[in-house]
Amino acid sequence: MIIEQQITDRIKQAFNPEYLAVVNESHMHSVPENSETHFKVVAVAEDFANKRAVQRHQAVYALLPDLMRNPIHALALQLYSPEEWSKNTEVRESPNCMGGSKAG
Image 1 (cartoon, rainbow, N blue to C red):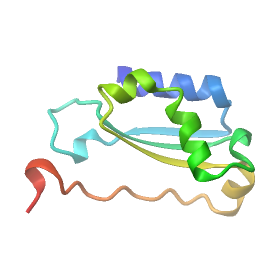
Image 2 (cartoon, one colour; image 1 turned 90 degrees about the vertical axis):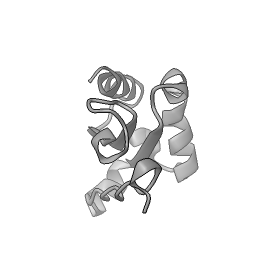
Image 3 (spheres, one colour; image 1 turned 120 degrees about the horizontal axis):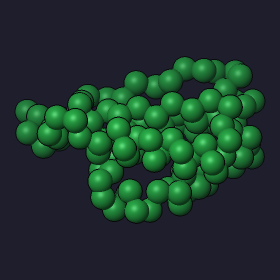
């Protein structure tokens, strides 16, 4: 839970989001139990208004360079402005892992 909390704290401090969900999805992948390697972040912040998706992603990645080198292997980002979120609050489900030992 240490990595999940670091992600949460950094995003809260940088963006003061109206909504934030940081979900550890490591259990859906071929990693040891209790791993913190795969995450989904859903964040709604005014800072994301009038920015392209790539700019929003870059802003979040800039907060996490040390974590992105190791231990984070995958980071799914769903980043919205408050206006976008007010029109659609659907959080996309992450696909099932098909890599590593789970590949058929």
